[in-house]
Length: 173
Image (cartoon, rainbow, N blue to C red; front, side, top):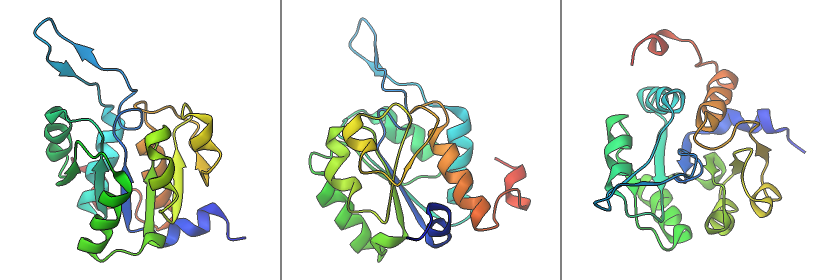
């Protein structure tokens, strides 16, 4: 069986769930009902670097929070889908629209709503604090929890295997 690191050589696309992967899953609710989330800066650095280096980066979330769009757009990620009730369908449409093969995709998810979609990707990844059902189907379980650098961990691994880590693009934001 081909090793996990060897498979990283063919990755062109990162697709992330948001809550529990790019955030720690916490939602803060103000008195006026406005919800906010906390995103990790190290994840943000890696995400924008992946975009700058020409990778496809996408987020698919069941949440309808526009704060997700604002944060990810600020990192150069334009393929952000919120309110996705059927992540499998959104995943398939994204690959079709971009003409991407599933074997070139890493999907990072953490909970039951990701269980079927994660199995459509070439490589299945989850944070350390993912539910057991997700861990059971993953090729790689990051030692880092969601929202604490998990996205950075996997992006860095791909860039290192592909010889793109610490190149000239790495020194600017």
